[in-house]
Image (cartoon, helix red, strand yellow):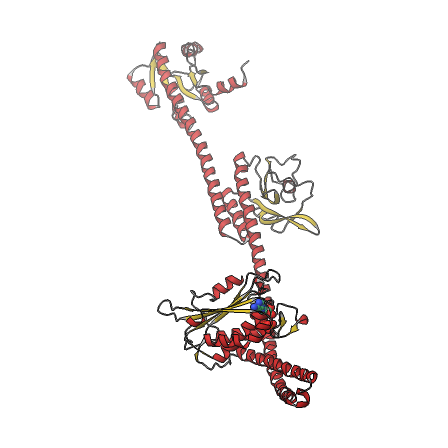
Length: 630
Ligand code: ADP
């Protein structure tokens, strides 16, 4: 019993057809050919031969007797030539009597390839048949090769198409940010390239009504769409390959929908026989599915799964990009709205501040002017009282009246400082500029404070003042500055401490720079915390609690209104100079001390601005000052 393989190889074996009305002749020929690996078919008549040629395949030669009843060999050969299947089939005539030239011609006219005379030599017959067998086998091999090449070609062209589609999708993902348009384009591309009429990108939506899967792009059905964008599936649906894939996150291939445990038959889509569904994922999170359906059974090959998995990954990236973009745009809009809101609030606050500042300046101006007149009266009358013998001769009364005089003088100084600040703020401080000797001004100031310095056992050391050149400045204004710095040095240095007043010239450096002088007032007092170094120059700023002030212009830690340094800075800057403080920190036990630096131009610049920028090389120029206080 031949195996199935044998049967298949038998059915493919080359066949030779022997046509002769005499069975003995047929047998003789068959015996001769039996050494070849061929199948021998026999026909006893032309009709029988025709029937066999029509029915059987793999014939490679016909051995045809010339003389036969009803249909002779020539008639059969002519009929065979009319059949497309046998038009080129080689025919060898075998004849006992008709081996003359006429018969040879006749035979060749009917399309014979050879003519053998009986008795046939087995060797000759075998070698002739073998030639045709070889030809047949070579042709078969060639045909096989062509078939194989065709299929390789087919695989290659599908592979090329897949790669091209992937590349196009990647390009679109990179260039289209509108997710709806992008998915529409991708779906269109897959439909055009692969010809699937049932294709959709589904996305998961979490909402109050539960988790649903919505058809985002694509459609099902070519002529009449059955499902279109907006169609909804329940994530929990027990039947539905799309829901199943969204739940499991794994691709699902169904090449025969009949009997598939997950396939859900939809009305109008009964013809669907294959479905391939791939999850769309960000990392481990499933956000939807790419679903392709076909009316053909076994529509998807293993390569299709790989191709569409890559496409699904690209689609997921596209959706994520689009969502991120939307999020960023949204955030940006929110931020812009917030910035606009804050800008409006700031502008409003700034207007309010400006108003408040103007009100404060107006208030200070009014109060100072209004206080001045009665204060002048108090000062004048109290001085007159002090001179009255009834008072001057009574020690207690004299002390009381002197208290009124000192108080009035202090009040007057404060009012003057307030007025100076108003002038500085409004840039109306007028300098009476002339030649001034800083050495002289500083010596006078120290001398004026002499009695208090003595009383508080504070030593004063001067250094380099005699090397200072005369400068062009307002000496009265600078007197206020130095008196303020010296008073502060005394106030914030405990009894027994030391004040150092030094000065030096900063030579001009380069063609555009003017020379400057620097004066430093240094003490061995309580020092200043780094965060206060700049703040102490602000209006009404005091490092100590204002309610605990002990009043006194020279007493240790005697409080003041916090105006002195503001006025000093206004005056120095009006001269085109700069003032700043340096100190290792505030410590009332260790007494690290402070140093106040004043830099003034030897000649004020022609366009003296209230806030000049000093050359970078000078200490105290804006950048350096910021570093120090930073
Ligand atoms: P006040 O009238 O309060 O002295 P100032 O404007 O003169 O106002 O000084 C402001 C603040 O700067 C003072 O309250 C003090 O805390 C600080 N200060 C000024 N000079 C010194 C100094 N030499 N040593 C320590 N602190 C000082």
